[in-house]
Every structure is written in structure tokens, then in C-alpha cells.
Amino acid sequence: MVYSDVYIRMNVIKAARFLFVALFFLAAFVFLIPISVDAATMSRPFEISGWIPYWRTATGTADALAHLDTFTEVNPFTYSMKSDGTIFDNGDTLSEPWLALRTQAATKNIRYIPTIMWSDREAMHSLLSKQSTRVALAKSIAALVHENGFDGIDIDFENKKAETRDYFSTFLKGLKMRLGEKWLMCTIESRTPLLDRYWGATPPPDAGMYANDLKAINQYCDRVRIMTYDQQSIDGKLREEAHARGEVYGPVADTAWVEKSITMMSEEISKNKLMIGVPTYGYGYDVTAYANNEYIYDILFTFNPGYAYPIAASLGLAPHRGSHGELYFTYLANATTTSASATTTPSEPTPPLAGNSASAAASMIAQANNTNMSFRLLDWPDAESIRQKAELAKKLGVRGISIFKIDGGEDPNMWNVLAPYVVAQAPAVSFTRTLILGSRGADVRSLQVILNSDTRTRIAVSGLGSSGNETELFGSMTLRAVQKFQELHGIAKRGNAGFGRVGPATRATLNQLQTR
Image (cartoon, rainbow, N blue to C red; front, side, top):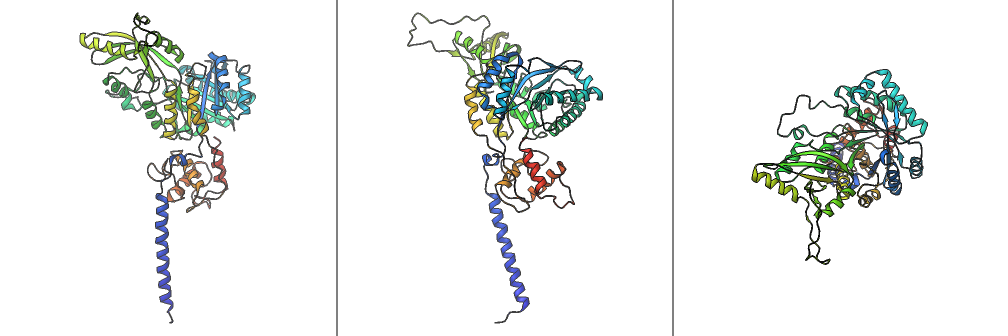
């Protein structure tokens, strides 16, 4: 039988259409296969850093040395600024025992990055607002890093004025340029959603005027550590909810508050750079209870966990874990220690009282008599609290946690709860082949993870392709994200031959980013 050319062409077209439809549905099926969060985050190792305070040099360095394998970075908390713009070394950082810590850190490839802390807002604004003194400061800090062979510097400039914002950003830009390949770490204050901060009240007009430009900080800093501690009364919503349950509420860092803050700040700071600040110390309060579960808190002191347990034991109290994830107990300031009764035998010890018994009693008395009553509150994070923060960091997909402080006074079980997160660290993925629209493979998923770590290049906000839902297919959304990445890093732009193609230059930048 002889077929016409037209007939043959028609059947070829039909076959091509059938093949296209089949391939389309096959691609859709593969794209819909769920990818686990763990697989999606393999190319981004979990990091743990820790500050070692100069006021506990001996115990802090000994503690860090004993557990050095836990860390990816250690931060001697030693330098501060004088009002004239000169750097002051509080901890004699260039002598022992710091030198021993630095040597051991180098052998284990652990970053050794000292902190410079400054909180004099008037002096800070005066210096940073003038180009000559701002440039001089950047030069002196860069010289400190280069001349002493530090791996970088941690800038912890707190309590800045809102009008210092742009000057601080310009300072970071100049410092980053002068540091070259050295690391620029930035430690900044946390933020709380305004409606939660001013719960039950109207936020003042200047409530959203912040002293940190998060987009600029994201651009110039290799890591951004958020000081998610010293919470106190900053979240009015969480406090009112706790009071409504009849709980006292004096956390150093409520896990729910930390999650709010990090979620809010990750809108402008790459998750690949974000570190959650984790406290190891507690607060002592004098608390006055009023009717209707109202409490007034006055901070008396900070303490390490070892201070609290003997007091609880002497009073026959069992510390209580609050809804905020930390331990606490309450007691009367003039309470005396408990003693066993005449009928108590060693085999029948007196059961401890509930840790919140004093606050509950004070609240009942205040309510019944329409009066007030005061008591003491000790609240502190233990190893379990720290584990919750590490889990939160994994849940939110941020880079890791930064512990303040390492000085021998933290809950000693902390090292055990951190061990699984150290073991879970994985090496970065090396991009070695060209990736284009239609490419498939594990390296495509790793590419998507990196793109999603920055809000400016993320593939999708939710659903397939979003953070935690990365796939092995290089689709149109990945193409657009790659193009944004290339424009952001000055690799290529629209009209260039390699625009949207993961070629040598783009791969080099991706590989370099994973070392940061």
C-alpha cells in the first residue's frame, strides 16, 4: 500500500503530540513526588557557635577546649570600644589561655572569631556619622583581624539610635571590603511583631523605626546572630496568655517568642546566614502578685543554673517547666529551709513541693483579699531548653545556633543534647556540571536549597519548590530563581548567553557560598 506524503506527515504529527503529552504527564508525576526536609537541607550543615566571656576567661576557655568538637566557631567575647573610637581588649586576647584555644581551634578547622561589643549609643552615632572616623574604625578593625591572623570579626554594636541606621550599614560595607576573605559576623537585636509587642495597646508612631537595616546586614555579613534572649516583657501577648493560665512569666527566651522573631527577621535575612542566639543563664525576680492574675516583675540578678538547684533543694521545691520551655520555681524571700519531720525515715523522704506553689498562693491571697503579695522567682534555661532551640533552628531551616555563654556555668547536660546536631553535620555539595532547564538530579535539589536560603532568590513561598519542598527537577521557577541569583551576584543579566544557565561562573559562586 502506498501512503501519501500528507498522510505520513499527519501520523508523524499525531505521534509527536502523543509523545509530548506522555512526557508532560511523566514530568508532572516526578515533580509531584514529595522530597523530605532532611534531604533538602543536606547541603547546608548545621552550625554551633559559642561566646566565651572575658570575665570568666579561665573557666570559659577550659570549658570550650573540653567540648571543642561541638563547635563550628568560637567567639572570644573580649573586645569593646572606647568612646574615642579605639578598641580595648578586656580579656588580654593575645595571651594564654586564649592562645591555646586558638591553636586547638585551628587544628580542628574551627573558626576563631573574636567579638567587639559596643553599646554607647551617643558615642556610636557620633563616630559612625562622620566619614573620617567611620573609615578609621573600619581600617583599625580590619588591621586587628589581619595582623593577628583571626578568621574574622564579630560586630556586636547594640543600642544604636534609629538615625544611626544608614551610617552603620555604610560602616559594614567598608569593613567587609577591607576584610577581604575574612569573615564578617554580625550580632544584632531581635525583633517582635509589633501587635504582639504592644498587645492590647496601639503601637506608637515610631514603633517600626529600627536601628538595623536588615537588607544591608544580609548583604554584608557572612552570618547574622540574633540575640533571641533577655526577652523580659517584650512580648505582651505571650505574657498575657501565660497570666490568663495562672502562670508567672519571666523567661529568658520563650521558644514561641524566638520562633516569632526569627520568622519575622528571615523575611529580610537569608536563612543560610541566620543563627539563633541561645542563652545559658537565668534571671532572679522579685514579683508582686495582684488580684486577677496580674504580676509586676523586678529583675534582681542573673545567675547560672548551678545557683538555682541548691536553693530549690534547701526549700524542698521541685523546679517546674513552664509553657515557655524553661525551668522555674517561686518562693517567699524569707522562707526557711525544710527539715525532715520526726516520723520521716530515709526510705520515706518528704516529697518536694511544686515549684510554682508560692506564686499560686500569692495569687490566691491577692485575689481573696484584693491586696498584693510579693515572692521570688528564679527562671532559667536548662539542657532541654537548649535542645528545643536547636530543634527550632532545624524546623525553621536556619543555619544554626549561637550559645551565650560558654563559661563552665551552663547546664552540663547541654553537651549531651547538642551531640546529635554535631553528628548530623554534612559536607557541602560541589556543583560540577552545567544545569539548564529540564536538568534532573540531586544537585538540582541542592541548587534549589541554596536559592531558597535567600528571600531574594527563593523559588516559591509555599508548595512545590519552596523551602523544605525542593525537587530534583530544574523547571521554569528554578530558571527564574537562577536568573535572579545571577543578577544579584553580577554573573549575568538578561541578554547574556548564559542567563539562566548554571555554567562555570555560576557554579563557582554557588560553591564559594557554601563555605560561608
